[in-house]
Structures are given as structure tokens and as C-alpha cells.
Image 1 (cartoon, helix red, strand yellow):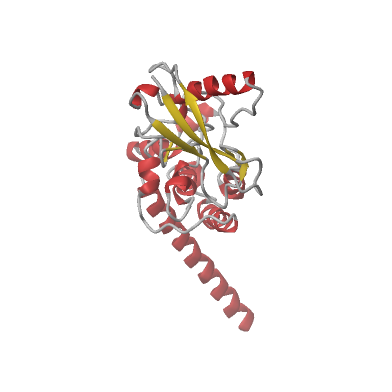
Image 2: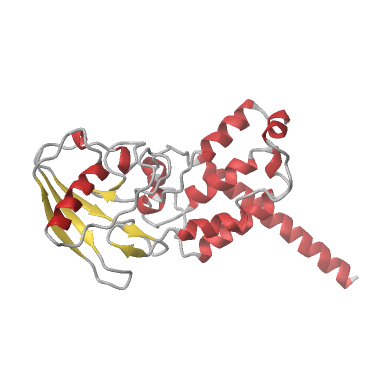
Amino acid sequence: MKIRLQVWRQEHARDAGRFETYEAPDVSPDMSFLELLDVVNERLVLEGREPIAFDHDCREGICGACSVVIDGRPHGPRERTTACQLHMRSFPDGAEITLEPWRASAFPVVKDLIVDRSAFDRIIAAGGFVSAPTGSAPDGNALPIEKENADLAMDAAACIGCGACVAACPNASAMLFTAAKASQLALLPQGQPERWRRATAMVARMDQEGFGSCTNHGECMAACPKGISIDHIARLNRDWIHASLRAGRRTATSGDSAGG
């Protein structure tokens, strides 16, 4: 196969950036997309040129590090497939493919196709955890949990935090990510004591990081390599409203007591 790549090159966050063209004349259909980039980079190094910077780690579709927009779609044209698991047989011989980083102000470009996704870490740190001791794994298994809730929690926990939802959303919203991380705990007994504080804290941090608002386009779910449903966004919205009303009642009660 012969492939032509139009790759976004950018030295750092303040650099204007530009597209550069690279030829890959001997591509095996069985190569993964990241292996294609490896081959292109080997040639660039041999020519004494700067290789293309891109993120990767497990190359097994587990970690979500392979964050790249391929022909306008996060992770490429195949549904529920990360870029590292996308094979070149998905493209026709002679294809011209455009590669870009995630485009979101909350994900500043580090270099070329690499963006800083630490905003996700700060959303998790705001409340995506259980702070109370819950025992070991056997203790957790001893807790009775409805099958439906257990399945839904596992579906939410499948989120790998790649950021494809943000890259696909016209508003660069992180609601699907935030909702998945909150929902996986909201559905379990261990997550109930901190459920309302978690919802308000994670949403507040998401807004603080500069992500856009969710307007129900559904592009996030379509781009998610794990197929996480936007139903989790509805659950987070309900929890946030519930938490806000509870906080309002507490404030009103405190005001009445102080006034009396």
C-alpha cells in the first residue's frame, strides 16, 4: 500500500503549527496505525529530520494514550476502536490521511499530536474516588448489588480517559468522561456517602478547566472507543440537581436558624 499523510506539526502550545506531507510507499495492510507512524518516523530519523511526536503506551486499546484525530474523527473511521488497534486495511491503497491532535482549549498542544490531558486528572482528584475504607476485594464482593446496577457501573468504568469525547464534541465538553467517572461510583453502595458532593465537585472542576457545555449532540458517544452511553450524563445531571437542591435546603435552614 501507498499512503500519504498530512500531519499537524507544532513545536509547542504557543507555536502557530502547520501541516506537513509525508509519503509512506511500503505499508502493510496488517500494520496498526501507530506502526505506520513508527515507519514514517524511522525514515525521518534516517534523513536527519525531526520525527513526529505522538502519544502511545499499551498499544492494546486499553490505556487511551493514542489520542489522534484521523480524517476528522477521533481514533479514526472504525467504531469502538482506538488508534493503536486501527489497521491500515481500513484505508484504500493510495489514501491521503490527515492527522491532527485533539482540538480543545482544555487540552493544550504539547508537541505535534501530543496534548496535555491532565485536566482529566484534576477532575478525578476533585471527587472521582471513594475516601471511606471499604475493605478488600472479597469484602466488596460480599455486598449485594443489583445486577442491572452492577452492569451499568462496569459499563461506566470502561472509560479509558482518552479524551475522544472532548475532541468529537462541537463544544469540547467533558461531560461524558465526567459522567462515566461519577456514575461508576453513584451506582454502587460504596459510592453513596459522597455521591452528592462528588457530583458538584467534579462538575465544578470540569467547568473550571475550561471545557464546554453539553448540548446533547451525541458525538461523544459515537466517538467513544468503549461505547459509553450518554445515559450516564443524564444520571450526573440528576445527581447535580439533587445535590444543588440539598445544598439550597441546608442554606435556607441555616439562615432560618440564624435569623431566629
